[in-house]
Length: 104
Image (cartoon, rainbow, N blue to C red; front, side):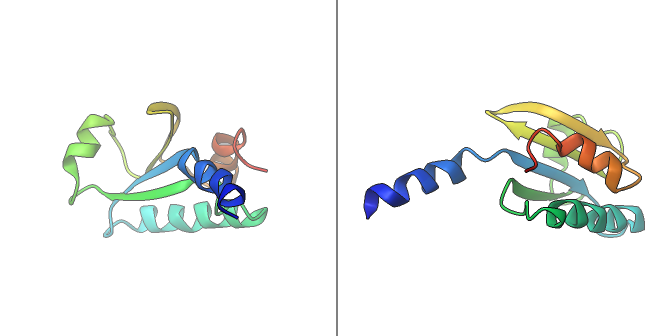
């Protein structure tokens, strides 16, 4: 039974990270959060990414390290490297296009 569970554990560890830089006081950020939920829910892709919400006021170090210039910003990180970025998305289509290589 342990061998059957090992690949699942490894699969979870290798999932790409989706880092969502946001502000809790921004209506635009909250709207994009809804768009992101729609895109991930559309084909049951909630488990595809390890989602990290980063509050720009709580983690200014990460905002600086990722060189985020506008909010909201979505960044896909895989293998410790930034693979894709979308700043100020305006709808589901843009988010879906960004995440297309990883979506089922």
